[in-house]
Image (cartoon, rainbow, N blue to C red):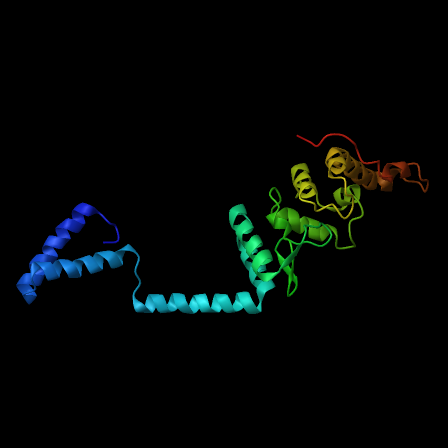
Length: 235
């Protein structure tokens, strides 16, 4: 019945009629009435034990949603962070129906998962920013272990660039994760190439310092952060 194949259903109706009449002396009209009930139930029905299990699960879920609201939404939004449509539904439900506020993505505070800040506040998970990924976010968290990032250049110098690329940085900038460092996102995006070049240069200077640095500061100028670029966002 669950497969809803009309030809097979008609065949089984005839077999049911014959069995009802031969075994129990039930007339065709009554047999058809019974078969119709079973056919209707097959559309979407549960046995009692199945329905009871679902009911208990719904009760537990509802209880958690009411009494641990921030944690409930954090867990569900982390599970669904790759599904933008479901994230939107959860986000709107949390805001409109439960008064939950969301702290925007922030490279100096966020982790991969959504995290509860308080009973009514949630920190947005960096993993939900399209174009990131768990390895990239873990590299960001590791990079800020010695303190918060102070600029885009500082970020590129301290984060493992084998685990984060320019597209990931651009996605984070456009999502507002750098807003606490610099509000002009276009300038930040225009500076991504320069920031990676600066980080590579600083790393090269550090590696060769043992051979060439004789106590003077002849290489010190390379550690001065350039100005942020100006222009259109990267394509």
